Length: 116
Image (cartoon, rainbow, N blue to C red; front, side, top):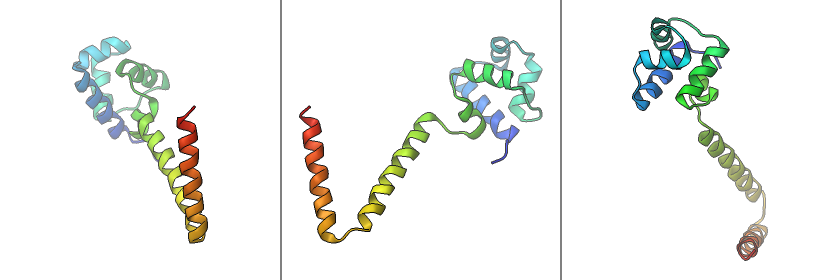
């Protein structure tokens, strides 16, 4: 995956507008020049890790979101889908009888854990 300054700038601009800040307000919050914030949002210049951390903190987003466009909830969803797919793959390797038995065990487990 390649670092794309234009996409990073678009995400920064989107979050800034969502919060209701001008470029001047963001520049003031991160202690940088207004023109520099303009250039970052356009993707015409890069930024230091320190500046990126400051922007992420000010906009209340993760570095993953700024760089890759992913949020923590998306990563959690991806992990959950991966676990679900692993269960489906395991069940696909079972005979019909074993699959029914596994389903019965899962139902018992869920019922027992609800009673705790």
